[in-house]
Image (cartoon, rainbow, N blue to C red; front, side, top):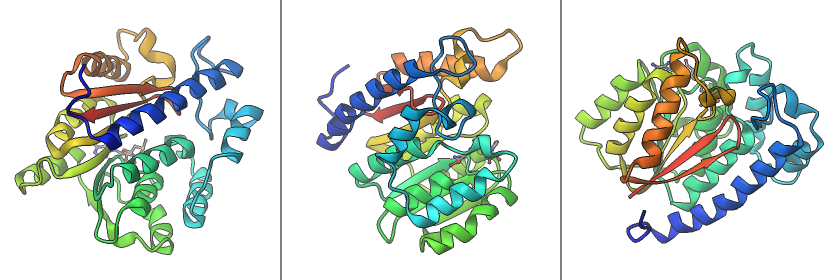
Length: 261
Ligand SMILES: C[S@@+](CC[C@H](N)C(=O)[O-])C[C@H]1O[C@@H](n2cnc3c(N)ncnc32)[C@H](O)[C@@H]1O
């Protein structure tokens, strides 16, 4: 696929990601999780906690805003904390958003808002993260930390099915006006989210998709495992999609970055 139409920023980003990808593979070799030879690495997952190399990576790269760190530690007390984005992955996405000078972002699946907060911190004062979730209680756990970081006003929380919010944005004439999107909600709607994001994101913008390795289950999805099947199908579709350039990284539970052409 041609790079001719891609901005200089996106090209630099793609080059930087090569290094992240290589590091992910290398670290994965050190210790993989429960899925045979599958390399899954998320900083707050069980296996990673005691891994000296993962600790080294975090000790030598994480630069969390104090309120962001507090939110992560608070979220780790929650019984659903496994849903939280990996902090090193979120930092990568925040760096990318900054690189492309993002002003408008989409967060599809908020939970306590770790990533929404991280992205909001990179946006200019008049920037906005449209944050989609069906639960009000979960994001509200994070709200005090958004406030403490001084960016609560940049997080526009919409409590309703994310597809409805994306349709609302399109109906409001916001097509091609977003710079960055993170897809991290119900897996069976991933393809719909991807298509709507392609309409909402500008050329040179980035769509980041979480859990694309789904703890290794994409390798051989079971007949009754619809989530794995949907993720695998979308991975195969994006691989062939001429509307984007793509990188699939082994950070977290697998992260695809689609750069809109
Ligand atoms: C994996 S968590 C998101 C983690 C988050 N991105 C972070 O930074 O830690 C998934 C979230 O998606 C939400 N969700 C599930 N189905 C949804 C839907 N149809 N529309 C919007 N949000 C949904 C859940 O309530 C949950 O908070």
